[in-house]
Image (tube, rainbow, N blue to C red):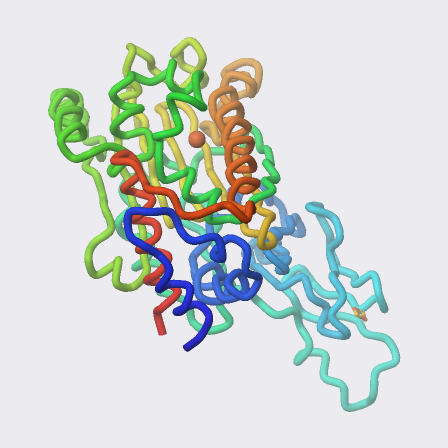
Length: 412
Ligand code: FES
Ligand SMILES: [Fe+2]
């Protein structure tokens, strides 16, 4: 019996995970292999690298990936590992280069990953066999996804299919980056992800978010379906039915997508919903007023919010006029990072059509609050007195997340 199945036996449904899941290095290593390295991970927006030679480095766990636009205008992803003796090649977070030169012995690689120069090598050395190792990459509607699997990953078209319509509608392919911010979090990644599955904490922890949205939205839909017991959710959905009907008439995708039984068996967890912000608010801003030009295919403001999730490591929220990409990264057993990237219409001009502070206000403050509560959670989970606690009726999505987690850990 391996350690994971022993640990799994100690998990009781309806409670949080036992302490070892958050503290055992061997579990973390297994999780990276079984889960993180197999997912299609949303990592950035393509407008970060507009010109040939533009690159950025995506780092998570021990991996470092160079995402670069080649001279042929194709975007590719390469392991930031020199094929000579393994040094990191790009040391800056982003930049623009004609050649990627390794800082150790100066082997140099083209923006398409080919080895161009290596000094004093034996006569039989073949440069064409020593290019950078490529990593799976796909772009959909301007969103860059990578997959760190060393084998063939799940077919990307199949993966993105249920979320295509909503992403097309918000037209992320015709948007640009308005702001970005990183939130290093001293906690195991599962505590970060669990926190994002529930809004039981929203009342006590997020006064600003709770003020912007209608109270019953926070209670029933703050973390998507599963935020509240079915009866309360049904009542809320009945209340907003006329608004949803109106959206449908206008051709705005407004049905909820919950992962299919088949998808769950494959370890998938895709989701989207669209609900009104409420309180007469048109956008997720402090005063509820629009923050920028309309984005996507909207003809007017309807005050809606779309929550689109690819898997627990990445999701996007969209109002009518801006989007926020949420990227959750495990770095080490007790170290994670959340990165937020805000998107606006590609034609919007800063300070004329939008102010970055208005757009970033709610998710910046909410994520700072989340960082604090997650780090406090981790501190308590490390105590020798910690035992798994009973989940509330407003945390059933945490159990749903654990089911996803266990399915992935046990997939062949
Ligand atoms: S390790 Fe990169 S050139 Fe030697
Ligand atoms: Fe939160």
